[in-house]
Image (tube, rainbow, N blue to C red; front, side):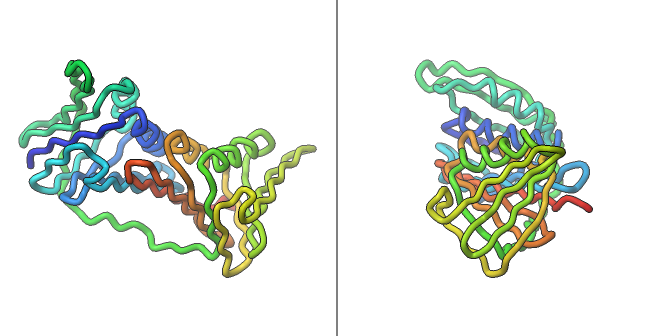
Length: 251
């Protein structure tokens, strides 16, 4: 079960590790023959993150047998954040070890810095991602998605989404304050598909983790329906995909 995996852009990958650490301080990294996966549930079970990174996202991907590690995501994030623009991020593992070896290797000088991350090897298992296709679906640029959440947070504690075939309304309010952003296809939405008018509310605290991957993601696709979990899918230049599910607010 030897592993050697090299990612060419850790300064982009760090936005993924930031997100994972925000959702839970530990999670599972699964090195499969098809690529790297990660699976994390928040402690309160209101958020779920599923990462898939195909072998093509890596400069080198050598995995002779699927292996699952439970790792401290906060510590993983601290390591990846130390990477510079010239570094490659390398994961190595030798059977029998209780550590995942992580190297930050300068591609110009060949100098590498080595970190050892505690890793518990778990039994391989199939990741069962929820099957969800919301009745309202829209895609927008990552920066617009981040602004949507950050703007609403200035005003209140919850964000309400209302979607019709013509538009998506983003709403937040508190005592004597209100926020509204009406989004239409092309302004600023890249696409909008609604099969049934939908409205649902989510806490901005639970949505805050979704602002982290916008630093590297190209776009975000949001799916939801009335009083149903929100599904946000982030796509990255190297081919990674990060899907985050957020439960609706209660009450």
